[in-house]
Image 1: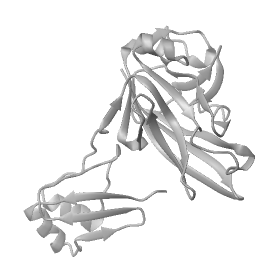
Image 2 (image 1 turned 90 degrees about the horizontal axis):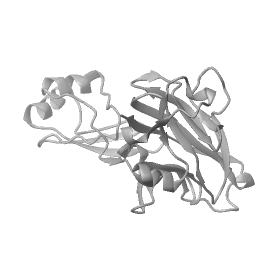
Image 3 (image 1 turned 180 degrees about the vertical axis):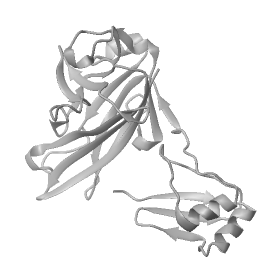
Image 4 (image 1 turned 90 degrees about the vertical axis):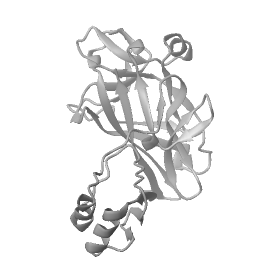
Length: 256
């Protein structure tokens, strides 16, 4: 798990409340560092809820402040974007989102992927896509994606070089999928004529992982059967010098 630093600046009464609660200006946990400065409040969240508890929660409440999640700063809705993109810095494996249009890399928590109504197509009839007449589809060819004005999503290992990972490959795993906060079976990734790569259907343990050679760039159809806000949790994993290396990230997809 990577540690991230966040800045909280707290005004007047909240700063006093922290002192009353017996807290030092800086509170350190195993995975997060919070710095409190007695000025106006600024809260940067990484597309997830900041949870506070105990005396810290009481201090925030005394200050009349609410810890609420913020929307991701960047929304991507069209163009070539490698949604699953792995990087190795010599000591850690990490996931990011790579916008090929601007050659920009994002932490997955900083991005919302938008799938608009323009992505709706007739259900191609594969059994795993349900019985609805239409699905939202991000296609596996750039020409189709550009014509519809939607994302052309990729799964990439092109930043990983040969000779580092065992068998020169890594594995992507779909750990969980939710829609509007509840587990969902409405997400899948498939190639060609219905060859599934990933499927959120919890009635089967199949189609939850796929191994890719390093240095490759891969595209398939991303299908969503219902509108809503999806949270897709993926992990990338590989072995370096006999040691398993991995990173896990949550991707937010808004289907409308």
